[in-house]
Image 1 (cartoon, rainbow, N blue to C red):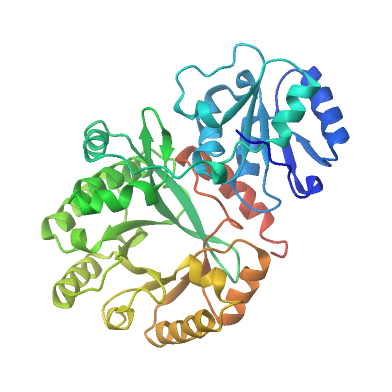
Image 2 (image 1 turned 180 degrees about the vertical axis):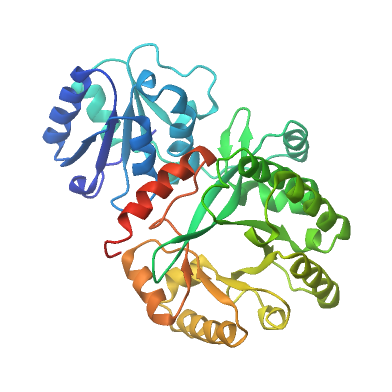
Amino acid sequence: MPAVNPPNRQRLNVVLLGHDPGWAEVVRGQASELGIQNVHIASSPEEVITLLSGGFPPVSHLLLQPAAAGAMMAELIDMTVGQSLGVSLIVLGEGTTLDRHPSNNVITFVPEPSAPLLAGALLNRAAAPRKPKLAPPSLDELKEALQAARFQTRYQPVVRLDTGMPVSLEVLARLEHPTRGILLPDLFVPPIEAAGLAWPFTQAVITRAFGDWSEGRLGSFGLGLAINFPLDVLLIPEALIWMEERRKEAGMPAERIIVELTESRPVTELERLREATTTLRGLGYQLAIDDVGPALRDHQALLDMQFTSLKLDKDLVRESPDSPAASAFLSKTIESARTAGLSIIAEGVEDSEIWRRMQRLGVDEAQGFLIARPLPASAVALWYKDWVARIEKPI
């Protein structure tokens, strides 16, 4: 792994979770020598998960002793190296090789409180941006993942822009590959859809999400649950019947579920889609048009259907300050959605400047790393408590 000197060590934010005070002394001393000013000694894995969940400044390095992580070790691995967000995970102490863990190739192990070893770990970024481009899973691997229930769920919160209050959670999928670790959806969703496996994949995601709801990890906050539906799946009548049956089994109110239409190609079967959306609205579900940007050529036709919200594509939101074309499209789309009576959600809200800009444009809700990263179900309650305690402060 090539060494990379951070451009500004003062901006690095190091978090240590451990029971051994000797490690804390070495970490503080070595960070000071390297010019790293921000070192936080965490008191519990719950505190670390709150720090990793979202907001700024982002954590650059997590140093931990597995014994201190306890039963939350899996969540800490997932929220660092498992998310490809540039957080380096450094595991401290002898005998901490995490044998057979598929993420070992991006975890740094420091067996003893050695200044040179620790310095190398802090100056190297064991983070996903430098990993080579990965090949998508094979068709056999995807089928095996479906059969073995290897698809996991993560939850990214959506909040009101006027009050900051949480309103919903978007369900995001991850693939737990037996040798490659946690894979992100841009690597496996396109081949799944190309192979005609979108419906069993959607079933797998819904089953996990409804299970998290019914088991009490998500259902106690009064939030909506947004689930991505490819167009091909939304047009299957049996799919809607199946989801309605699973919803009732989970004890979820239909109005808490937001079906997000995801589609990368033009919608050619508008009447069939209209029938599906009418059915879902009749049952009480909410409906969102997902990833609206210049590439989605037919969103104007969708505005005439019974959708309840529109989600602005994250790239459009990020690029709009520097791109006149993106800014013009954004303003026009917001005006059209407002005229149609839809609520407007901005994805990709990653800093306070974007937050305030979306407020000025009249956007209703926001989603992005400023608010929270995708969370395992067990971390949602920790994020919720921390976020609600902070929203009285200006974003």
